[in-house]
View 1: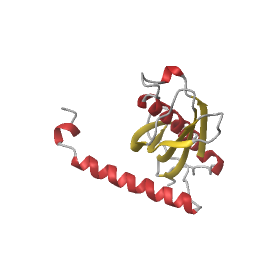
View 2 (view 1 turned 30 degrees about the vertical axis):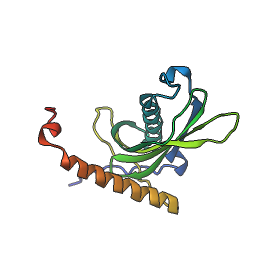
View 3 (view 1 turned 120 degrees about the vertical axis):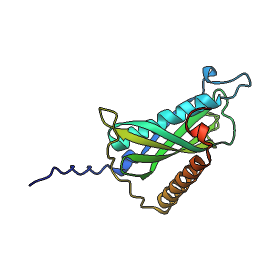
View 4 (view 1 turned 60 degrees about the vertical axis):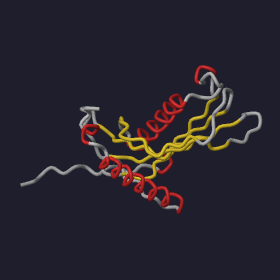
Length: 173
């Protein structure tokens, strides 16, 4: 008796593992102090990471977690903003994506890192069910370090979940 087997996931060119967005920070994105709202920046991060996840998986993808976000310096109105999202590790249906944000005066041309974080997305099918993604195999030393970092963050987030009080985990608080 033949049993159906799932078809292998086609390989994806490494070039599809990275997405870069660039734009100017507009007055509509800043707070009263003239700096970009953290929430606006988080939205840009989520959009860039989603584009990267969709490019890699060829599927719609949903955000599962955001970990270790760090705001190092403010982004000012008029700054050139560059968000770089890279697949750094994959599971069966998940993609760990590192996002770095750089910004600065476009007339000067030097951008400084303002923020970075790690996000996890899961690819889903038309019914919203998790679906397999192509494997990402780190090759360079930098890719290997980022893959280890992704797994360390995953382990840390898993440990934090264990620390949640029961009423918080159950959604009662």
